Image (cartoon, rainbow, N blue to C red):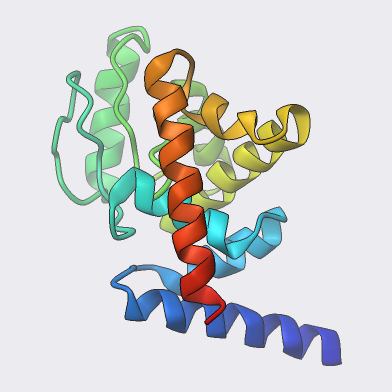
Length: 170
């Protein structure tokens, strides 16, 4: 029971500190990071990299639903129908962890709905944890893809992770 209370307290402290720095969905991020087994600083860094302040939004990839704003169930289901009509060739990032690949989105749907911030975080953080477990810190690059842009992505996430570490551990 003491361990559970300490875990909840850790989540709440991390969430409160992240909120002071303008992050949204802070308690969900903390809880899902712990659940996935990734450090809070990495979780907040990934969300910041993907959406800036942790808003539940569609991405800006030049395909379909560019800049469609907030992800809602209705918008997501309309996007998914268009994505599927394209043979899953046209995809857009969804949510706090910007799930872009259609199979990731469908997996999140099976978990409760890709439009749901908690589910996006759960799937995205589990995916990241698995990639890091298999490939070390290069898993961060692999979360984004390959090539020079993915290398830059990894550097950016790691820089943000350091910043979040200082913010969460004053």
